Image 1 (cartoon, rainbow, N blue to C red):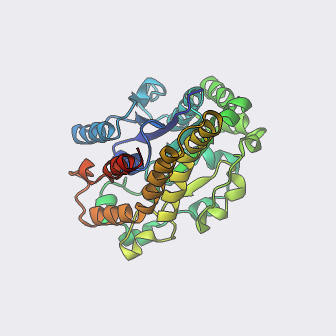
Image 2: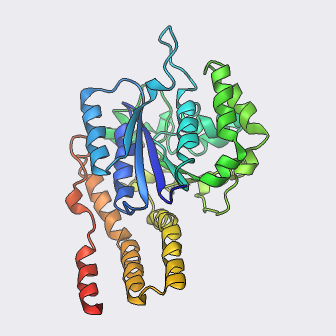
Image 3: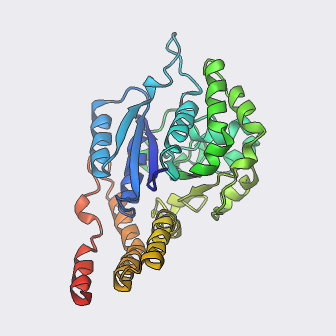
Length: 338
């Protein structure tokens, strides 16, 4: 199994640009040697949205872009296939856990009952509607709290919260259970028309997927935490995160994500030092690089806040020039220690 981690997202017309932007932020905090990226697209995309996704896919050096219609097309009458996004997630996890040690699924910025990622891990498992809706940052009555650029892209009459989340999957555990294969087989046998197949496939072995590592959850996630052993990390943190006009995510979760993505590689480097007697100063350089990486998260957060406040992220893009670059510092240190 490859030591690289996979990071993937699903993009559609309404919210794909949000997920792509979040991935571009994660891209600034991950090592290209450790992570590869995948983007899955859903539904017919407009030319502008398609161009945006391609721009971000290039920015994050995306490994590949897949069209969901190839895997779970709509019905013959053109009616939406309610299991298409669930099938996509299962297909992606089943495929990528075979070649990557960890998989991070970046949810698009919506969180509604029956909508893709949330439906896959909540709706089929008797999660009370009140509990799931408790996650939502807004209701229709509070729609004035939603920033205009987001609100304009929300489907009419749809109750959603623009809440980015991550699903963290340990590949070995996921593969050992065989749960992905079982669920995909059941979905196909049902014609991809209901979530009952998911319920059957997951019900008996859901707890087996509990990860070996534990991630803290925000207050609104705790209420259903027992139902989600594959825990979500909700970046927004507050119940009405946009009320203070800051937006997006809590810095502490970016720190945890960085630790998640770098821990394994760092441990491998330390093991190589122990086994092969590598020069300690080179490892100190690497550790100092990681420490500097983490210490600059607050600075990056401020950049993101300013970027959002300008409200130019629909037609614009997060400039690669703003990416934190510590290579010059490392080079200078290497000259001093060599």
